[in-house]
Image (tube, rainbow, N blue to C red; front, top):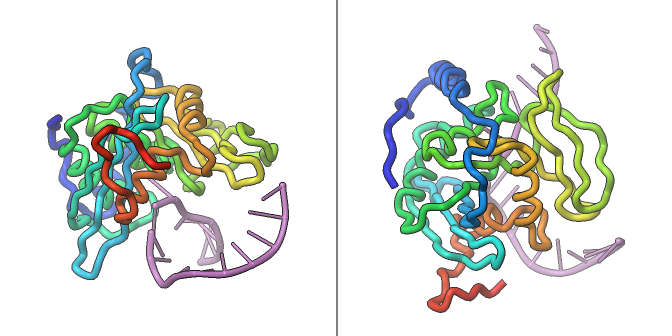
Length: 233
DNA sequence: GCGACAG
DNA sequence: ATCTTGTCGC
């Protein structure tokens, strides 16, 4: 899969915010097609090493069976340091590089971070989805923008994540008595569908499997897919 | 001016 | 993000 250069990456924070504001207008918050396929790509990036390189990882999961279809990792130098609100300018170039090595084209991308639950409604999941032109979901471990009322303690409990009058996403409890995750639309999917995919991707851990496994892969803690396709949970 | 601030 | 094993509780 190939893609076009929408904008430069090595930019100042001011330029990055301007780019976000422009591109946010292209984000689609509804399902593009009936999402019946089940190849979900989880992506994540490790911290940088002593030489300035980060490891980007993508794990493609067949969701009904949770079989790992493909694992790819790449090494790259993030163009920017981490700035709150500009995470995608640091991580997306690395993640795109990893996604471009895939033999499989996923039906959906799940990202560790926010989608439209962002000051300019253009978090990393939206940025990546727009660039790849694929449906994407943001599933973060903490809030960047917005707030919500307390949640019930059981798995599946939800509360709207709100910023003034804007409904940005959903605080979702994926395990009973465990801190919620924050789900938001990335691109080409609606919030309701996004929440259902996140919940159905959770297998006994707080984080959904695609993202959780990508995190392990980026840290070098995930074994390559076995020949027969079985995974050792 | 003062906090808040994905990973 | 990262420094990091065992331990407490559902």
